[in-house]
Length: 159
Image (cartoon, rainbow, N blue to C red; front, side, top):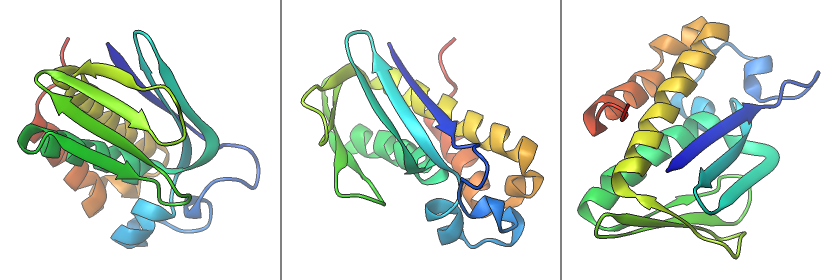
């Protein structure tokens, strides 16, 4: 079992460029690196990793997890590099099992490849749909379209 969750910083005066700029006129780079900073949590049956500094760009993280699933299918190893601080999350696939090793933690997480892909698809869809409720122009951006197309290629979530 794996669950990937997020929380945006909704405090007054906080957040990313979405508080000052329209999503529909933002560039792909701005959407990926400057909009929607979030806290991220990854939980498995026996471990949890959290980033509670609200600095991980949510669209970048969601899209990157889909890339991770694609790379693990073909290469067996992938990583997510943090954009705002030094560090990374390494993903290593051996057979059906994936080890998730954040560089800022001494604990690794473990789940199956199918579970990771399912969780990445659920996260990507939830991010796009949740954010598009508050920012309707986001639906039409190439980032949102790309995330949903990649999620569809990876497959429907289990259950």
